[in-house]
Length: 618
Image (cartoon, rainbow, N blue to C red):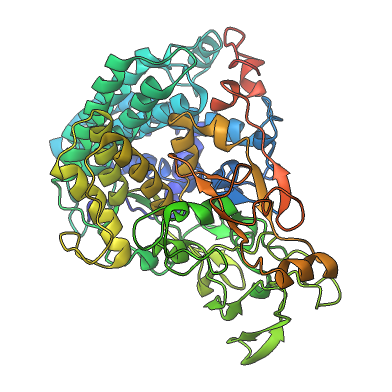
């Protein structure tokens, strides 16, 4: 397989963890880096789940959040993350963890690369190249992530080691470097890594970084930087640089497309806990509880699973991590049109005649999910439980028909996630889904977007986009029995591409980076979250009796595939979303541009590194 997949054995984790101490055993010294096996152990540690945080149990106990809950694709009842209330400062746990773990990773990569030449005689040339390629790849990923989240990075001299006293003291005087000076170096590092890494590994080898991973992450990073160069309105726009970086992204993606990856045949099956070693996976970290050595970073547990489960899952705390109405309305119909242009979309039954990815992502009302029928309708006091073989009280609806508090915290907007979630998530609420960092569909969309933005639109662009769309319909992309993308107009294709990305990658932690790089966060993250009326007979009966279920109106959809609930509706009750009679305003997001396009540097860093100035506004 041409993917990163590695199981971190307990002994490997412990061996490399000791490197970060000031130990009597001298594990951080040259006494440790003597042979290929020892370098392998340290490379293994760099693929520990904590180095690639996404989920709510990976940021620390003080802030349990998903990256998707920092966007318009998700909602947590009537609550908002501090990030969406402009309440973030240098103590923001997500910021601290992302900064600290990235620089811890950079230091480990530097250590490996610094010590590797002295062990050259103790390994084959092939092994030497592999170790060097992996370390340079991971380091480039970490620097790219710092640039995306924090802007100007602190570049650490490659021959420094923070575990050594002298280098640690010198680090206090480091300053930040302009991100655009570092961007090309990161791209070159990805390219250099690709020349050193294999396309595939033998069946007897542990699978680590590959050429596909290096070129794929290069393409993603170059596209991110190109987009800012094109769409930024705060002083960073540069048309020539945008075009150059788009070309880098297209070229890198094109190289991945020659390596034999393919899309998983079934979009819905791709994200299940039982699916491993998919031909679509390029950069994937497996999770394993049995091999975790009781380290809970290595699998999903507690809130990371229960937050995404409905009430009838049996979880004590759930429905705090739900798809938004924005996301539901963003899925196209099954004719390939946004819902405000559709002739088949019915807001009273919003799951019919939709792109299949809608019901792969969000649980369709009245269908089975984790062993019960999921139906939040206010007239449904009971639903069928396959697990119990009988009708049970419908705690997945906030209906007034149920007394008590058992259904009080059912989904506030009537939506729950299907993507990633299946019956394997039930008690003891511990899951082992692969962490998919990069998959082939993203490479295809990166290639298409880069070519679209350069206005270099040819058949290869349509083929790339249609492969992704056709897979959702389980069709051959060369056929005509699905809503094939045919337009070659740049503006039209840009609109479709952005919709495709939102439908394809919903709840895969990509939306935040897309709205940042397209510079639309200042728009979409200043909209409100909407939901259903709470448990009240008068309000709920009015909603049902006036035929407002599930939505009494169709919102306009803009060119960025964003529903404009607060503006004139395309059809239906004109005040459905804004009048306060039917839809309920759950919360109001707040995003301050340009400040919120970057996270603050942690206070723990700025307190000791006095030459580092924090980002604007923090």
